Length: 441
Ligand code: NAD
Ligand code: G6P
Ligand code: MN
Image (tube, rainbow, N blue to C red; front, side, top):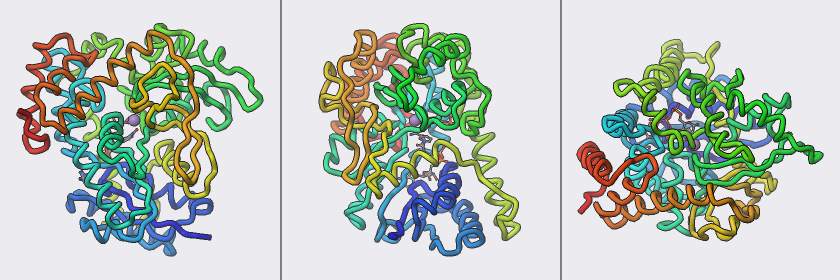
C-alpha cells in the first residue's frame, strides 16, 4: 500500500504534537512514510521537533521524521500539507482581543475587529505556504486550519482559484461530538447532519440517525436548557471560558428554535453580554499562554530532558481526527460526508455564488462535492450577507491596500456600533500591525 508523506506547516504550533500522535494512531488506515515539520521560526519549532523525533523513534521507527525552516526541504516530495500557522503568534492575538475591548467591542481571535486584524496578517502567510507547496510538490493537497478560516478561504478563492487547498474548522466536529454524547450515541458518525452557514457562523437544520430517525427534538430539549454544556472529554475546549460559551448557546438557540447553532454566533448576536463578561486585562490569549502553550511546551521539554517519551503524551481529539479523516477521504476516494468551507456556487440557492460557505460535502480524490442546501430563511440570509460582505471587504483591503475598504469592513461588522468607533479601533490596529499588514492608504 502507498505510504503518504505529510508536512505539518506551523510545526511549532501547540496542535502539532496532537496531530503527530493521531497520525501514528491511525497509521493502520492511513499509512505514513514520512512526517516533516515546517515553521518559519526555528526557536519555536525546535522543542516540538526534538520531542517528536524522540517519540517517533521509540513508537514508530518506520516513519521518517525531520523538522526544518527550509521550504525546499520541507515541501519536496510530499502528498499533503497540514497547515496551522499563526502569523504574529499569541502576542498579536492578545492585541487583537484587547484593542477592540477598550472600546467595548468584542475582542476575539476570529470574530469582530480582532478576527479581521488576524485576517490581514494571515492571508500573506497562508499564500506563502501554499506557493511553496505548489513549487516543490505540485500535486499535493493543503488542508488548512490556519485562522481566520473564513477570510483565508475568501483570499485563496480569489487569489489562488485553482490551488488544491481545503479550508477547514474543527468547531462543528467538536460540537457534534458533544451532541452525540447528549444523545447517548457512541460516535458523531452515527448522525447524519444538515448544516449551513459561514465559518464560525452556522446552523444545523437536521440531525437524524442512519435509519432516518429525527434526533433534533431530543437534542433541542437539551440545548434549550443548557446549550452544549455537557461534561465530555473535549480536552481542547475544557477551559471555563469555553464552558461559558457552550452554555450561552441556549440564548443563541432561542433566536431560531428550528435549528441548533454554532457557538461562535454569540459574538454577533449577544455582543453586549460577551463584552460585559470579558476581562479587558486578561483575555483568551492570556488563558491559552498560561495553559495549553505551557503544557505542550512543558511536556516537549520534559521529553527532551529525559531523552525518552516514555510515560508522556499529548492531547489528540476531534481536531486531529478530522484532518486525518479528510486526508483519508482524498487519498482513498471514500466520499465521506464532511463540513467544509467551499464556494457556494448555487448550493444555497438564494445566496451569492461566490461566497465561501460552510456546508456538507462528499469528499473523494477529486476534492469536495458540495451538497445542495436549497433556500435559507431571512434571518440567516441577512446575517450571512452582512458577514460575507465584511470578509470580502477585508480581502479587498489586503489586495488593494485600501484604508477605506478596511474601515468599511469594521463598520459593517455586526460587532461594531458605528463608523467612528470602527475608525478608532482600526487606527490602533494599524499601529499594532505595522510589521504584518500591507500599508493601507
Ligand atoms: P501557535 O502560535 O502555537 O502556532 C503557530 C505556529 O505557526 C508558530 O510556531 C509560528 O511560528 C508558525 N508560523 C507563523 N507564521 C508562519 C509562516 N508564515 N510559515 C510557517 N510557520 C509560521 O498557534 P496555535 O494556537 O497552535 O494555533 C495554530 C493555528 O491553528 C492558528 O491559526 C489557530 O487559529 C488555528 N486553529 C484553527 C482551528 C480551526 O478550527 N480552523 C482550530 C484550532 C486552531
Ligand atoms: C475552536 C475553533 C478554532 C479556534 C479554537 C480556539 O476550535 O474552531 O477555529 O482556533 O477554537 O481555541 P483557543 O483554545 O485557542 O481559544
Ligand atoms: Mn474554527
